[in-house]
Length: 257
Image (cartoon, rainbow, N blue to C red; front, top):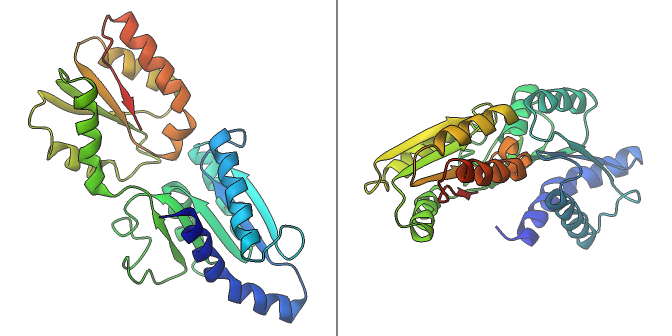
């Protein structure tokens, strides 16, 4: 989905409530953006700039006719739950939520505040929307990964390192409840492999231990699931992967996210 389409949908979803509210109460409407990454993440800051520019193109200017607040979770589940409770208790006019964990928490916390999501995998199977054509409820947005693309990740790894025999999927089960769907998609394309496995991780120590253990045997590749936790720790994962494969004499452990 193009960025302009994403911004246009947000504008369309919230413009009428904003106008009505402003006319009735003469107050500036409030939008809260809940982010899956850390505040200092450069990619996240770039998205914030693009989001602001998109809203301005639609006539919404921060601190003039709209209030925009940004909250950051750094991929930590406890922080996500805390932020969700805080935001819902002081309800904004609309919430923009990045990532499955935020949307799941918001779905439990409110059925009235309009929610627009991004970077969410399989929103239909997770129960966030009634259908892709008609989301229903108070939640709409954009899915992140087309599952038909997942087999392509495997093909890319095999092109980079044709001798790969083992593939493992790294994810945090707390922030990536959709991981079983990824494994099914990988399995359908893994006929040439001798091993297809999974590595659940929940903190930095588990990331390091899992990568070092996996790298002990040769011809292995790591695919990192795109969830808020692994996004927040992507530099750490790449560093451990490089160090682990060097330590164990296997220079073909790879990360693709």
